[in-house]
Amino acid sequence: MASEQASEQDVLLAKRIIGAAERHDVPALKILLKEGSANVQDPTATVATSPIHAAIAACGKAEEGKEAGDEAVQTVHLLLENGAIWNDLNKEDETPGCIALKLGQKKIYDVMVEAGVRAELLFAKMAALGLGGDDDDEEDEEEAEEEEKPAAKKQKVSEEEAKPVQDPKVLDDVSLDNKAYLRSQLRYKPGILLDESDNAVMMDWETQIMQRHAETIAPKKGLRLMNVGHGMGIVDTAIQTHEPSEHHIIEAHPQVHQRLREQGWYDKPNVTIHEGRWQDILPKLVEQGVVLDGIYYDTFAEDYAALREFFSEYVIQLLSPEGKFGWYNGLGADRQICYDVYTKVAEMDLYEAGFDTEWEDIQVPPSLHGSKEWEGTRRPYWTIDIYRLPVNTFVK
Ligand SMILES: C[S@@+](CC[C@H](N)C(=O)[O-])C[C@H]1O[C@@H](n2cnc3c(N)ncnc32)[C@H](O)[C@@H]1O
Image (cartoon, rainbow, N blue to C red):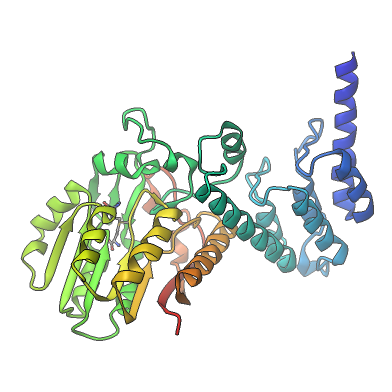
């Protein structure tokens, strides 16, 4: 009876917190959050919602003259300060930022992006210090599991990544572990490369993007270039059109080596294939004093921490002072807010490592969304409209 009463009280408190969030009643919310959590759910509600989802939904559509006022913005800030999770999902599979975007509430959307950036930077710092995040602390894992993770492709943020390599037979999705992926069977089909778990590793709709990446790292002929991750060879083919004096390709998957062999890449003038993971190859190239004018990075089944390690440990040592670094910007591309957060996080980490970033926006073919191209794949890794192409140079 006592616990029933307690749970009734909990439901009542949850309703009051959500109600105050919806009304953007900051003074009431401040008091209520001393007793209850910013992440409460009302179990009796027909559509379960968190306070922050409720606060944003209550703003209504901006285009109907309802641009979020100060109270709404303060409510969102207050909930975030009290631990509301930036990428928490409601029953409709929407983060609070997704709702803000849908409603055209730009100010609130920007607040959510900033919150995501802060959370991800903190998460990464904690992981680096061994204070949870990516470690094996059970509570942290449970919390992390509640959070939204961007879809697989190329870079992923996943706590699984940090765990010891699992037996690929047990692992349902090999893209969750780089070494499991590298041991798995690939399938080259027309216009697509698939891994053993049906993830699209590479697709030919990205050709224009790859060509532009090649142009940006090779603004003239005769440069010393390196590409990490051959895949379908789209970017390497584009790099060849810029007639490099050196063209290094680092690739770790044996079936991709086979394909490189079949297609005569080993015999092309100025091309050097380095078989192995970049983590093993690059220290040797640094030791040999290799200097490059352009570096491109586009791997698979690696998380953002790998990209950060790539530029902050190796690009800084291998790139010439005037050189250009490009990388596939695909993290979180199945959800606009995740894409915006990780784009910003990368820009900040790149700056910390000594790089300026210039962004070029490329329109993704609108026909891609929901198209047949995704048939037979585990999930579409790209659902947003704009690819933000990064070009990095050393800060002057
Ligand atoms: C997305 S594909 C690259 C697509 C390429 N940009 C293109 O234009 O076709 C990623 C490639 O990186 C390779 N790869 C994955 N992890 C790697 C690692 N740690 N070191 C080197 N190559 C890796 C994969 O085998 C795959 O061939």
